[in-house]
Length: 190
Image (cartoon, rainbow, N blue to C red):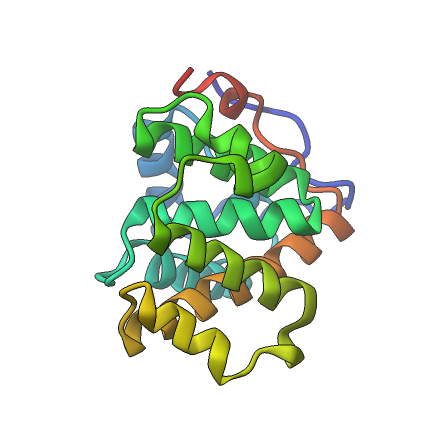
């Protein structure tokens, strides 16, 4: 099923035709997911912005890291919950459900990650991501030490901060332009 509704409240028509490489990327998304995520469609009016967005997203969320893919998605949901970003809560909540095999975990993190069945490492990561979202200027060495004590390496701490920072930025853009989540996300991994 493909979503044909506008991805945002803005009238920014996609490039037509899309550059060949971009069309291939969209075709891969459609093949793997069954649809092209609206976040990609939202950026399709400017291929350079789309490429910059996807490069950063793919690096932070898919590249090798001491943080698992599930942990990175959990960070996305916790940050998005704090920012009340509808698009990212729906899209990344679906990813948490799929990666965890738990149909309730995404909602628990979205509503109040403190009630979710997290291990000490995951709880420390989400505590840090939420603190960073609420008041990044208040983070001190003790906050980073708490992450080390929970088993995160220096690189893990950097990756955690980068993922949380990225979602703070994307949440604000998505909310400001009324980015609509693809309806397909709502039923995934239930």
